[in-house]
Amino acid sequence: MPENQINSVVHREIETNLLGGTPKYTRADIVAKSGIELERVVQLWIAMGFPVHTDPDAVVYTDADLDALRTITGLTEQKVIRSEMEVAIARTLGQSMSRLAEWQVGVVNSYIHDRIPEGADATALDSGDLDAIRRDAREIAARTVPTLEALQSYTWRRHLAAAAGRAIADPTEETTSRTLAVGFADMVGYTSLTRRLGIDELTTLLEEFESMATNIIARGRGSVIKNVGDEVMFSAQTPEDAAHIALDLQEAFEAQEDMPDLRVGLAWGPVLARYGDLYGSVVNIAARLTSSAHPGTILVDTTMSEALERDAEFYLKSLRSLRVRGFHKLKPHALRRNTRDQ
Image (tube, rainbow, N blue to C red; front, top):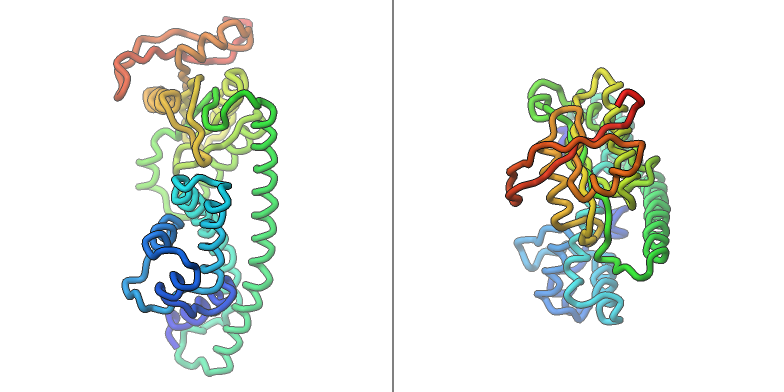
């Protein structure tokens, strides 16, 4: 049996285990059983990142799919969330879970393929071999998925507690509008590196970058907002924390001979916090400063410079105004750690 057929067998067994049963409903069945209009069902399904089957009569939905649609629409009916937020929440949840699923499947897949007998892609496989592969796939999925799910749930609860703590600590401030330091740290020359490095080398580079950046940001009392390839976006509650994070990042990357140079941009001010991301002029300024910074340097905006200028730990140098997209004149300041020689 060819390898692609074996993979298909493994896929079906894992899918059945994960979905809690085989698909048994059409789109019309879901609408009838849930009492939710078709347009809303399709809209939520797409928002969660799932493709809509081209055949409306295809049997592709499970009891879990039905329960999920009832759950999210129930939150709206109970006024836990506003109706206009329903699709946005489904989309944010889908995007976050999709990324988690990618690496989790990688973990499970590698383990399963290690268990498939050597030479299993040959036509000599008999029904006994296939039964063994099906059994192994079921057992491995049943053993590993609950562990990953439990770890995922724990991490989510920990982050939820931390976010709730921040909101309670400042009850006068709206959760959607906050004053924060926003920063971007970008690996210089990443695009050219992707043309020279093999897949394994590139994977190692990105893993090292994300690991170092996450560790330094967390130790500096900051929060990672997102990683986008060669760049990490982070926030901090104070300008001082953000400045320390930026300096620590630069020093850590300078100490690594096999890592590209880093450039960092920081800005301070009000931002819109929406579904785990940050938006607004402060975010745009930090991004523009990052793209304008020379390798190995840190640029901060005027507002952040003014907040740091009386702190003896930092040395700030005013630079010429920049003309960047969206801003006629952006006044940057170079940030360095203060030393006795300065």
